[in-house]
Image (cartoon, rainbow, N blue to C red):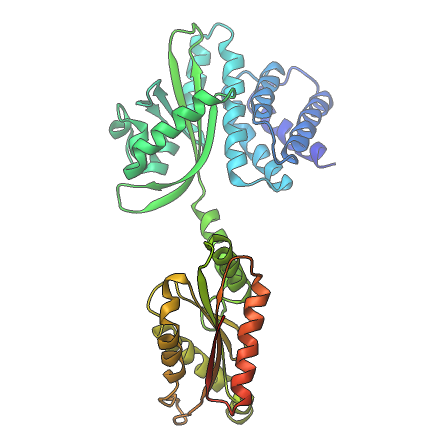
Length: 405
C-alpha cells in the first residue's frame, strides 16, 4: 500500500527532528491511517483543504512539537501529491494548511522561548516561501525563500503592501482576495498568478493566502505561502503547443483547427458568417516521388510562409491538416474580403520555389465556402469546403471555387 510506504519515510524524517513518544511500528500505523485519509481526499476533485490543517494538528498531537516538523514533512507531502496526480497548487494548499495546523496546535498552549526560537528557525530555513502581513496585507516579515521567489530583499519587503507585488493588477487582486476571504469559511484563498520581478522577468506562482488571528484574538494577520510553478507552466504550455500545432510548419494542426472552429461557432451571433477555404498542392505526390520527401518538406514550409503572408490579421486562421492539405478560416470580421484573400492564396505559388537543386513550380487548387455559423457543426463546415475543393480539381486543377450560402 502506498500509504504504508509514505508513512515509513515520514516517520523516519520526523524522528530526525524529535524523539517519538510512540514506538516505531505504532507511529507508522498512525501516520499510515492519516495519509490514507489524505489520499482519499486528494482523489476527490472537490477536496477539502481543511484536511491539511487537520493533518498538521494530528502530527503535533503525536508529540512532534518542534516547528521543524513542517519542513521535515514537506518531502512526504510532495510525494503523496505526486502519487495522487494532484496539480502543484494542491501541494501548495496542502503544505500551507498543514503548517497552519501545526502552528495552531502549538500556539494553543503557552509558547516558551525555546518554542519561539524553534519557530524562527523553521520559518527562516523552510523551503516554502512564506510571508507574514498585517490585516491589510502590509508585510511584517518574510523568509529567505520568499525573498528569492519575488526578487526583493527583506528590507525592501517590510512595510510594503504585499498586493503591490502583483504589479499593474495590484488593486484588482486586492479586492478579489479580500472578497473571497470574506465569502468563505476556510479562511484561505488559493490562486495562480504571473509574478513580475524587479529584474524584468516574471514567474508563475501558486499562492495561498490565509487569514488568521493571534492567540489572544486581538490581532489579525495574513499569511502568504508561495510555490514557483514556472517550470510546470512552461512544460504545460510546450505540451499544449505541440498538441495543437504541426511540427513541420508550426501552423495549427487538425486538433487545433477543430478547437478554433468550435469556439468560432460557439461565439457567433445569428446571421454571422465565416469563410472556410480548403487548399492543396496539385500533384504533390509526384513532387515527393521525383525529388524526395526532404524537398517536398522544404516546399511545404515555404508554402506555409507564403500563405501566412496572405492573411491580414491574427484572427484569420491558417492550419495544416497533414500532407499538402491546408485550411484557411476567415472569421466574420474578415469574411467580406474572402474573394480578395482567395485570390492572394491562389497567387502565392506563382513564383517558383527556389531550392538547392534548382527552382520547382507547383500550382494549388482551392475550394471555399462562405456560410452562416450558428447551429453548424465543424465537420459540416470542413466537408463543404472539401466538396468545393474537389469541384475545383475536377475542372482541371490550378483553380479556385467559392460557394456562398
